[in-house]
Length: 155
Image 1 (cartoon, rainbow, N blue to C red):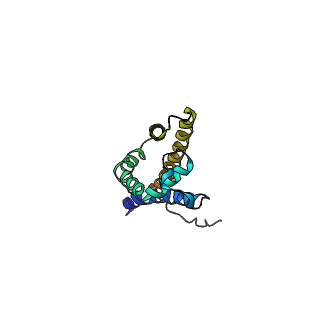
Image 2: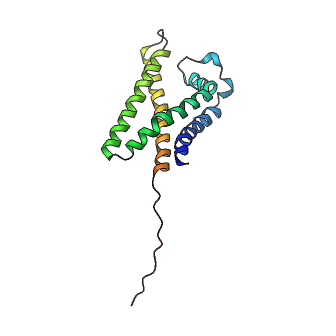
Image 3: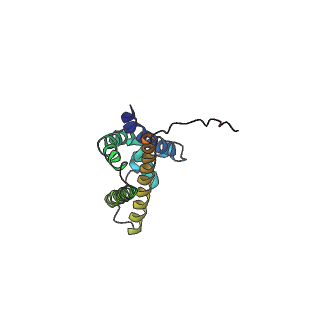
């Protein structure tokens, strides 16, 4: 049961947070599919709105095939191993964000625009993975038994 929770709960929490952020924004009802690829926050929100079911399936598969096995290995390592793993995760987020930003970059806009989109996408990914790893930590953490203090007789 705990293994199923490790696969389903972290992506669900992350997606619910992003869904609420997109759904209750002021531009939600103005989002259109033709706004995709402009490299703005609204285009990202439109992408999330229209492709959320597909993104959620990809998140579940990624959680099951990659994240949980890596987590089970890293969780048992020393603090240095955990720190190095987090740095590698941050590097992967930056590389994916840079690749996606470059792919959607309109060459007629300034190069500074691709840097802003890359920073935004890196931030979105890091927030998602932070939420994901915190939920995984609480699911993996061993519960310590609560012991009641008994009164010692005094003489």
